[in-house]
Every structure is written in C-alpha cells, then in structure tokens.
Length: 87
Image 1 (tube, one colour):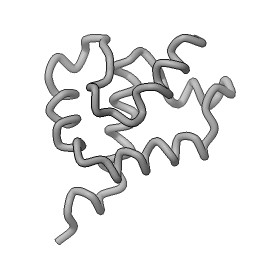
Image 2 (spheres, rainbow, N blue to C red; image 1 turned 90 degrees about the horizontal axis):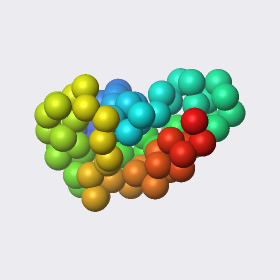
Image 3 (tube, rainbow, N blue to C red; image 1 turned 180 degrees about the horizontal axis):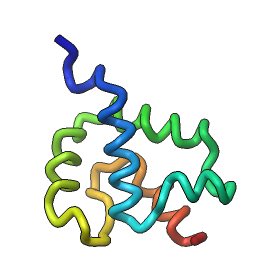
C-alpha cells in the first residue's frame, strides 16, 4: 500500500489547491509565463517532501472557497505570493 508521500497526484492537487486559495490559477500562470512546468514540478516536489501535507488537506478543506494565505509551514507560500502579486 502506498503511503501519503508516494501519492504524487495528491501533491499535484495540494499545490494547485493552495494556489487557488491564494488567488493563483496555476494553469493560467503557466500560460502567462509566470510559472514554468519545471517550477510547478518543484512545487509538487516541495509538497511531497513536506511533513505538513496532511495539515494542508485539512486547511484546504476548511472554507475551501475563501481566498486566503498559505499555512506558515507551506514551502510554496512564497512562490505563490510572488505570482499572486504579478497577476
């Protein structure tokens, strides 16, 4: 059985969800050249290596439609804030 760290799809959705929470549409950011596919792959890997992923799932499930910020522990928070400031 695959543990939470092995489920790459989960981290794809966590990274996209955190972007959405912060007002960043990852797909649009890539189309606009604000984020490369390699950048997004690094974001997914940061999620995969993070010990707070289960906390992110809970964070994203609470008030999922609210725009807000990333949790303090989010390794992608800075990148998403920077992209959010450009759009």
